[in-house]
Amino acid sequence: MPKTILVVDDEPDAVDFVTEILEGEGYKVVSASDGNSGLAAMKQEKPDLVVLDVQMPGLDGFQVFEAMKKDDNLKSIPVIMLTGIKEKIGLGFSGEEMRAYMGERPNAYIEKPIDAAKLRQAVKEVLG
Image 1 (tube, helix red, strand yellow):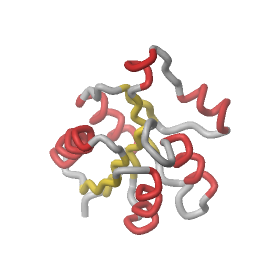
Image 2 (tube, helix red, strand yellow):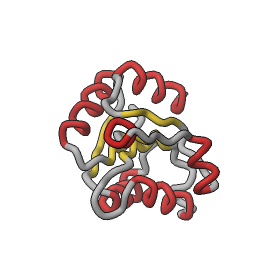
Image 3 (cartoon, helix red, strand yellow):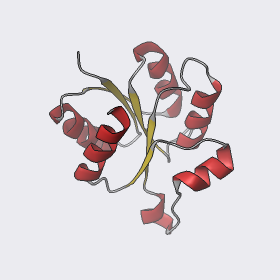
Image 4 (tube, one colour):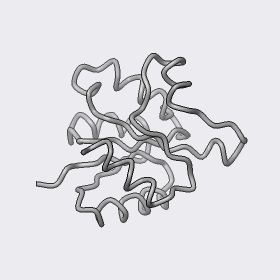
């Protein structure tokens, strides 16, 4: 049975791109278009991995990540964060900066525009 990956991103093109890459690797991909529906999908789907965008309306990726880490049923799900912040404003985040800020860090960080090879590699490293 293939592992399930939940993609949470408000940009349909990004969701389609990530879905195509990961389905090509044999994963089952489900998606949500904002933070609240992403958290609901995590509870329903119990994914093996969450690919989480940072900038979204409503709950942003940091807020979703924080909510996951406070929920006993979700806190063990690995997270790969996607961010276009560096491209838009020139500031980036590292996993270590996130750990300092939130006490936790994602399993991987990928800058947008998404490099397919980097995404494949990060997913393989996280899921084994």
